[in-house]
Image (tube, rainbow, N blue to C red):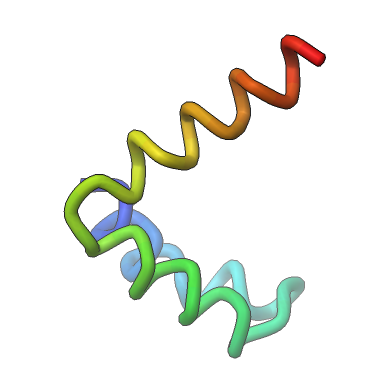
Length: 48
């Protein structure tokens, strides 16, 4: 679901963000388990 939202927002977001990195993030989030990994990393960073 998150990747689909990123694809929808792409025309607006790439006006201010790097289009290559934005596309890479969108493709990564389409992979199974990627969202859980990102959430875990954010929690780990906030705990330290």
